[in-house]
Length: 219
Image (cartoon, rainbow, N blue to C red; front, side, top):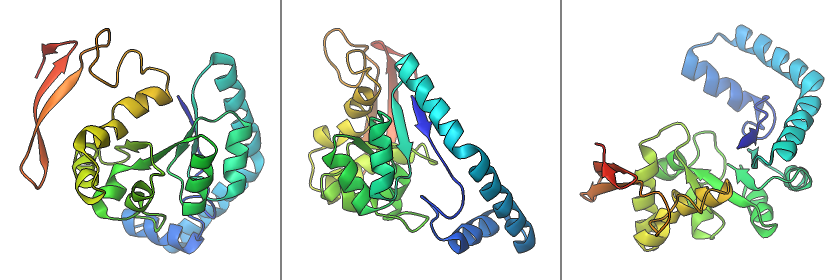
């Protein structure tokens, strides 16, 4: 899979440059003057390289039959661009409108598990749970907190009143479909790899108990 990303401040994930500055200055302790210089450099690089680099990656994906994802779409125009490029996955749309347009045009919509666990986006964008409750989400990703992936499924099952066997597809079968591997993985069926885990849930945090690879316990 190739994910088409542009994290230049002032668009997509951080439309508000001041929010971008606050987040990174607070997270990394960068002085404001240095942050301003960094932002100017990123904006200049984006103007020079973004279009050519994105087009080159799209061509590579098309030539090699690699699934393409569009990252942090915020507007209808972003989604239209993704559709024209043959993108199959809308990765972390930042607004309700972008998520709706992606879903209505057949793109698989992916949101982050940390967003679910926290109850909202750390950068002030649309809530993953809001999109789940509107049936606009197909896949949940671990994003920047791997252990949140499993926890998010139990939260979704409870808060969105979805049976666990349906909610689990957000992290198993649906992602496999997105990258055309659903004939091999994603569910327990005859002919597929028997890779799975067992879990204990105490009502607070799910705990991993066992790991199986192709039917054999490995941990």
